[in-house]
Length: 79
Image (cartoon, rainbow, N blue to C red; front, side, top):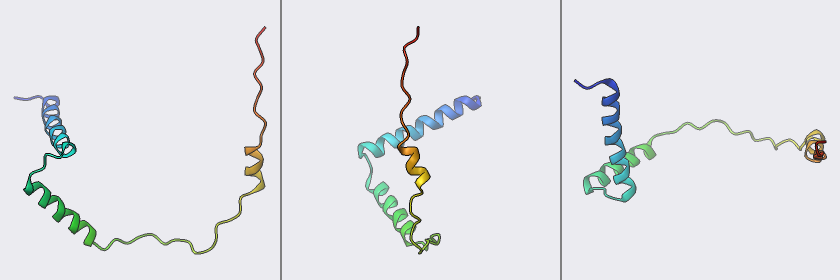
């Protein structure tokens, strides 16, 4: 009987092998067709996007500008 950690290691090595094959371009014709069908299904879905503000963005505040121009601390030699 496999321990839970051994099961995880076995399944992870299987998934790593699949990822390696994908990255290496070792896809079968069936794999490519399945991927294209899944991509088409995903792109055909109606995706509801969030509302986008129509008013212009606010100007930057002077406070933020002052922080950018803050002098850098000087290093002092230890005695």
